Image 1 (cartoon, each protein chain N blue to C red):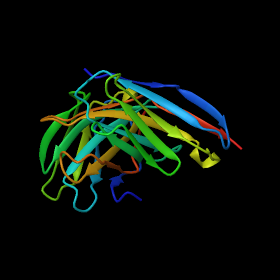
Image 2 (cartoon, rainbow over the protein chains, first blue to last red):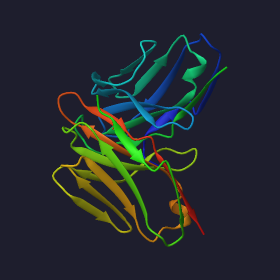
Image 3 (cartoon, each protein chain N blue to C red):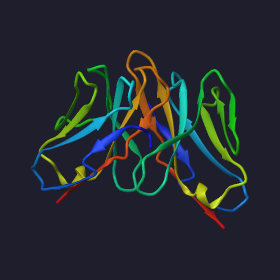
Image 4 (cartoon, each protein chain N blue to C red):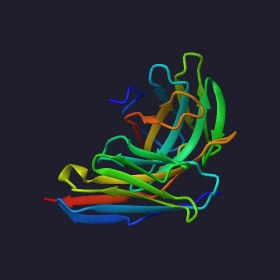
Length: 113
Length: 113
């Protein structure tokens, strides 16, 4: 157990809908990262937050947005969902924005029907 | 942008043999190279990492080597065991003002008993 928690574990929704995925970092970690892993695909970095501020952006679609709250938990919002958004979404945390070690949560499996 | 290529995509070895997975990267500013192990349906777990100021690092049966000039790094697993069977991802990360994260496409390792 990495200490990073994600909810929900599974999410099934229809195209066009909007969902929110939640992540709580390890105690003491200030940085949160979001990744998307499609079926049989590698990890795609989406976005990083540090202490409430956006720090880096990867291949994140405009339909997706994220934020990190004062208590350091983070939410990833996915809107106007498409079939291709079905994937595992992982969050990871690290101690600081420049910490080299990231610890992954168990992931949220999103299925868009 | 950065491109991390990982080979092979699948690797099958006999228990007790060694396994080698190779990655190449294009961004010469990349300075941190972690390796993750992901078992089916589970989260990626950091198994070993190396920084750009080090050429080799070993942890029991696992070792990583880095050749900065050639921009490639490799994961070596010796005395493989069935529980080593998983997908392994390499990554090249550039920690500057804005962090850049790039993952390889993964190698599915199968260790046959």
